[in-house]
Length: 57
Image (cartoon, rainbow, N blue to C red):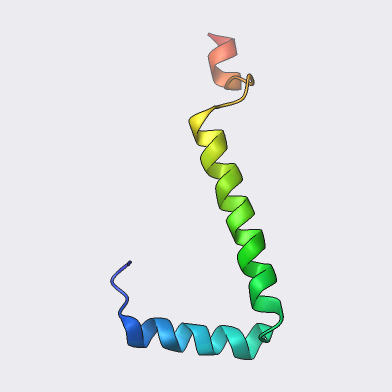
């Protein structure tokens, strides 16, 4: 995953716990998951809004 090994992921996890605290990490994960899910849904089914540049033509 992105060229990161287990040691690098471990260091990132420890730093995240030190910065945000163990209680805040699940909340951040949930928010990130909802954001990514919404982004993926929007990419699959774009809304009715069109690109303003397309309307000018």
